[in-house]
Amino acid sequence: IGSGGLFFIIIGMLFILMINNEVQYRTHRQNIIDGWSRMEFLKAKLSMLILLVLVSTALVFTCAAIVGAIYNSSGGNMFEGIKYIGYFALMATAYLMVAYLTAILVKRTGLAINIYFAFGCMLDNILWLIFTLKDVQLGYFMPMESVDSLVPNPFKPKVMERRTVSDGTLIIAAVAYIGVYAYIIVNYFKKADL
Image 1 (cartoon, rainbow, N blue to C red):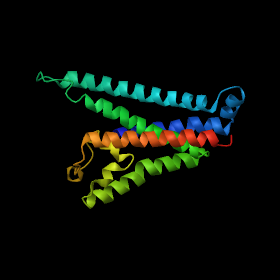
Image 2: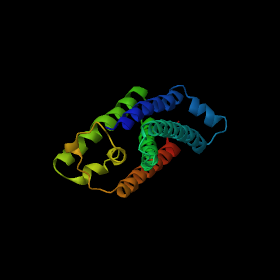
Image 3: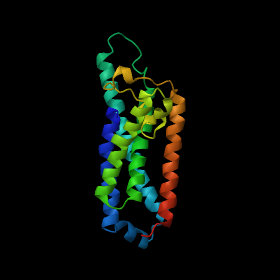
Image 4: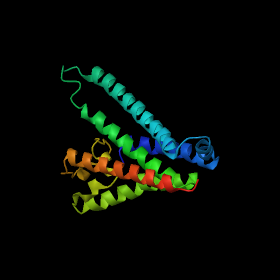
């Protein structure tokens, strides 16, 4: 798991806690009784997700710009790797959408956090490792690995860097996963018994 992915595992757990607290204390139900539609409730949570993505991406950009300015003594292009900021935003969105999906599907906070952690930290990585050791590129199309592979991970051993899949293909896969998560969230919540 990339260092950015680890950060979003923690943020995702907080996001699950926030949504499931509304379920546990029936705040979401009261909001809908008071006149919110189900879609308005989902949009409110989505706006929080977008805010978290924007703030974390702005923080990463600011840190990268400061470090780049300090260590760019050779006069090279400081914005050479700017695409990685976009990749980071995509990774943030994917991780938080998985947290959002988990929170909507699993009402118990502890169970939802455990499922999210197991999926984000263990299952996805174990499957990626199995596929990588067999020299199969399918591992890079796992839900979390498709975004993790876009952002360089300084802690990943060089021997494990076997990706031949293009960045564009991984971006398409990641956007497709995010679309599937959104579709499941909307359809489930529309029919869910509140």
